[in-house]
Length: 417
Image 1 (tube, one colour):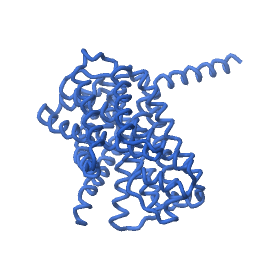
Image 2 (image 1 turned 120 degrees about the vertical axis):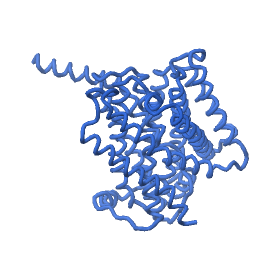
Image 3 (image 1 turned 90 degrees about the vertical axis):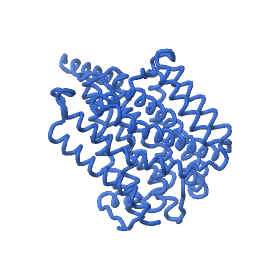
Image 4 (image 1 turned 45 degrees about the horizontal axis):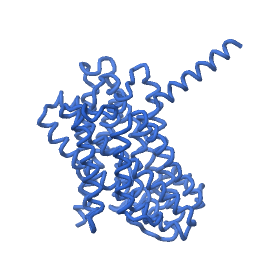
């Protein structure tokens, strides 16, 4: 009897520790499902039905591997990835990497505000109201709040993305066809379908994620004794990410694809669902887009401000006061203002902005991943916690695959001009 009590007590104690540590992995993974990600999954479902759902499996594996390395490096060194790159690569290389990441961060944040504007237009709210209101609320959350408060709100946002489950079920999907497409994957071998696969896998990993994951682990003050709980947090986050992506694809595959409806952005998917699956399904889909966009509009400029300040030796952190981290807060505020203003400009070139931010991401991603894997293998940095042979095999394989996908993403459009 005492053994049972002891076991129960241990289980509850471990659960309490896990809940306390919960956050970095789930938040970083969930931001993957931003306005750009939702658009990619929606277009894939509308164009190819259930045919490309299998791509979520390799995406999940890559996401877990990369985030585990980041978390381990952050816990062991107590330093952000930007700090480590500057210390080991020098200021010149660091400068060019982070100027590119800053431009990419502005482009990505602009895309998120476009998602806010589009989702609220489904509910009849003008972008001239929704975008400024969201920008102010986001700014207040970060500048006036604390890391603990912000993290709890971010976790609620992450869970809210599961509303896409409702949208998918209302579309009455064919579960047997979904199972068959996963067990026996099939794909037309042409440039269009290949480009879509590249977009689906590539949308899982972005350069900013590596910096944010490592910084958030440090901000939370995690140690190696918390490692197994951190790993569990990462896995849970990756599962949520893939589950949300799965149901977005299912929602569009079961409604838009059979009717031959093609879309260009996530807002189109929400509007197209209305006559096919009902007004509620349309509104739930739009609400999910709104939550994802506001969530990412908070995290992306925050991550950008974090790693740029780390790279150049400035203080950074939500828990620091304005006077303690002036450069951090000024940079964060500037990114928000620039991105929101671009959306409010009539006829703003949103598609080229989104395209060029992806191009910059594609160029910088291999550089960031290679830097990260080299660092995590240095004994003077990681001690006994360097990568094991299996970690390196999976890590370098991921780098080769992602580099190939990034290169193809850049080259394919040029070949078909």
